[in-house]
Length: 283
Image 1 (cartoon, rainbow, N blue to C red):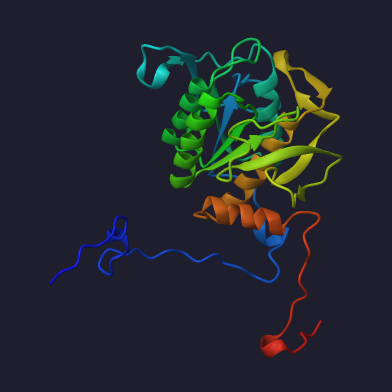
Image 2 (cartoon, rainbow, N blue to C red; image 1 turned 60 degrees about the vertical axis):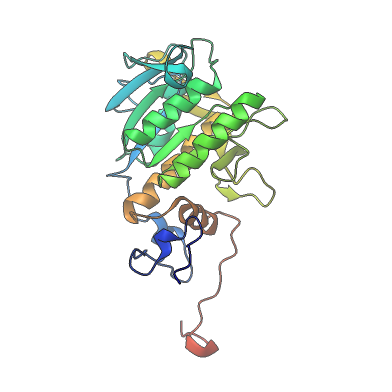
């Protein structure tokens, strides 16, 4: 008698099981192994924000751009429109410039989901993130969030879609207390700002990492720069680090990437290298 296989188990049958790549760990996993010599070339990074001023000197070009507008008549409540490559505020340009400063070789794409007052809806956020995945983004930088109950459910689904697609969603924590989404979801890399140039791992969820975002100089509209503070500018820094790692180690899954970043944080404990069988390694 042939027994029925439980749901989801067909893909695990011996004849259908695929080979997976192990994480190429070394002792220790440090920054030299993780991203030494990498500039992010070959990695597509999406900026989901209020648009990007593509010709800003600190941005260095955007290969593709689209805008998303709430529309109840459109599929999933948002429609895609052409984007002129501009940024009426400067926020998205700042994020793109931070990414480029960390990973100058990446290919940047832009999904404009915020209006002229940096406001938007969860459905436009979701549409922009989904577009980024379709466009081949391996890293998606998202310095925005929603606090609505409707947004929570929708963005939770979208965060899972990104994760299952093998892309990494990097989100800025809200600058004000209280839960916002998708920042608080385990499927994303959540980032808050720290003073100075440090990159640290957090032991208290939901924020995973801290990166420079306090009194930092960023690109702004009209080819200008400004000095400002916000978690918004810490997230693209980590998105840039993700691109550096993926360019050097293609195929890492989102959770493997998060593990590598945690091992490379300023406050990570560095294990002492030992010889096989517990013997001491020669210097």
